[in-house]
Length: 174
Ligand SMILES: C[S@@+](CC[C@H](N)C(=O)[O-])C[C@H]1O[C@@H](n2cnc3c(N)ncnc32)[C@H](O)[C@@H]1O
Image 1 (tube, rainbow, N blue to C red):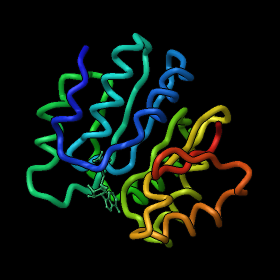
Image 2: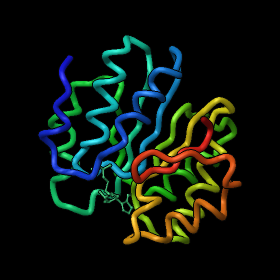
Image 3: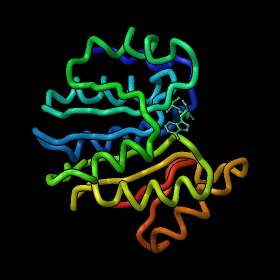
């Protein structure tokens, strides 16, 4: 099982967080990624899951504004029967997942879609309802000055002592 994510165009640099999430996961866990784009980060996570031999489901969500982007993602991720690619606005998806009688729990949630302050604030609020009590939530571009809304929303949502950082990403639950 060989990694191929380096051949996909994208913004992925959180290998360590993905690897840690897979290490901590157990059979039956589900992961959620918001912000698929071309599936670079998803491809890394899918291969890590496959290599682990664990029964982990992975849902990745994107609004897929670019024509044919979902088809491209499916062309390389479709072979993983544990990966589900969903075309949706992330807030709509989270509202849907939190609205049923049974609210599913995710062991790992990674946020890498819209980086606007109001969006990230709402997203974290909803995603916390879905996070397993032993789960990890993380997100990209905390320390990217081009997206200051991310850091502002993350610091509004969590106590700073509950956060850890790796490259550009923030992590809660470690
Ligand atoms: C930075 S890219 C994701 C990068 C990807 N994780 C990678 O490894 O390269 C951000 C993605 O978020 C998606 N996006 C933006 N706003 C969104 C929203 N409101 N709901 C769902 N996806 C959204 C965009 O379509 C884009 O593909």
